[in-house]
Image (cartoon, rainbow, N blue to C red; front, side, top):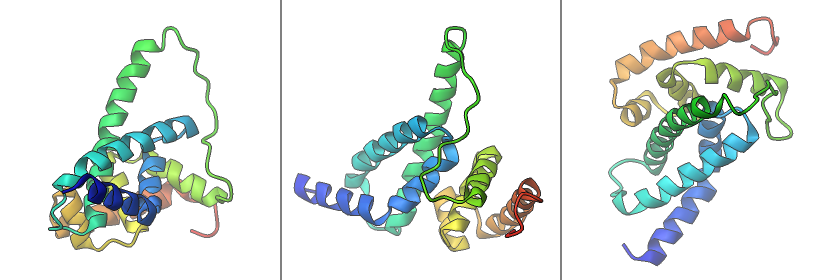
Length: 169
């Protein structure tokens, strides 16, 4: 793959799949500064993965896989970094910074997704993005049947977490 082709494909992926990337970022990072850091990390890994993309899977499936794996690794390293420095830093609770125009319901939904186990959070995001069970199974390396079982549980957990907060649910 030529450098020009890699750059062209990468730029198209960023433009075409920005919403997908932001869903993953917002599910793994609450603060705007962390979201920016994670998006940069995912973008770097996506750039590095372009030459390995053979087209066997849909581009969105590939991008989800890169984004989720990067986010999980970022979260682990971020947690270790924060633990090492917590004696020196004074953290205080701040509300999550959501991009302007987001409703309270969306903010509450992403907060609830962040509280889910990572597999469940991944499934919730893919459900929001209307991926099929087959596509979800491909991204996560699990069976379609297991996707269905997990999604039923995830829907119930999210509904319980958001119950009473908004009538739209």
